Amino acid sequence: MDFSSRFSGRDGAGDWLISPLEGEIGCVNAFAITAETAADVAAREALLDRAMGPGRKRKSSEKLRRGRKPSEGLAFAARGADGRIVGTVRLWDVAVASRSALLLGPLAVDPSLKNAGIGAALMRHAIAEARRLGHRAILLVGDAPYYGRFGFSVEKTGSLAMPGPYERHRLLALQLQEGALDGACGVIAATGRRLEARRIAGSRSGHVVAL
Image (cartoon, rainbow, N blue to C red):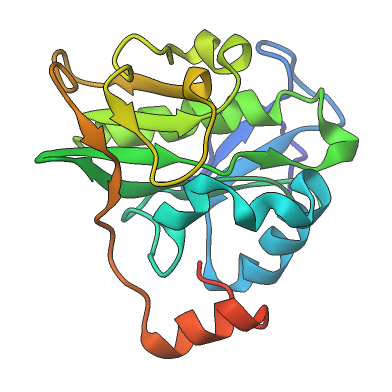
């Protein structure tokens, strides 16, 4: 991947080239945010293991992702100048009663690049794309001090619940459309496209993992 011109904006292929700090052009840690592909699966899973550890698959959020595909057009990878995946984020289709929403996560960045602005850039890109595609709200389980900068809060999640153990103060939401979660109440359920049976079996054995 040629980052010789390093700038913030779209390149000819439709990728987003981003410098770690807003307005900082020509930084050696420039990266690009691209759509994830099937060829990225192994590298993404290795990155998630490094960043989050082996316990990541036991989290309550995983119950909403297991056996499902990410929401159409909402799986992203951040790539370094050498093309290596250095960050990842995906969003998943969920619902509370009859209200549709997205579940964001996991968001992960290579531990060696934690302060390079990659996570924030992935968040901004994911939110912008979800809004552009017409989604109404995004949910996640995470730390309010970090995700609050992107507009997430507990304001609309008091009557919502995850399908398993979780810390209530970490269930956050961002409305992309006014009133999207007004009066929402109940347990969050997965509604995304299902994986083929063969791929589900492989993912459980640890040999094949869904895009």
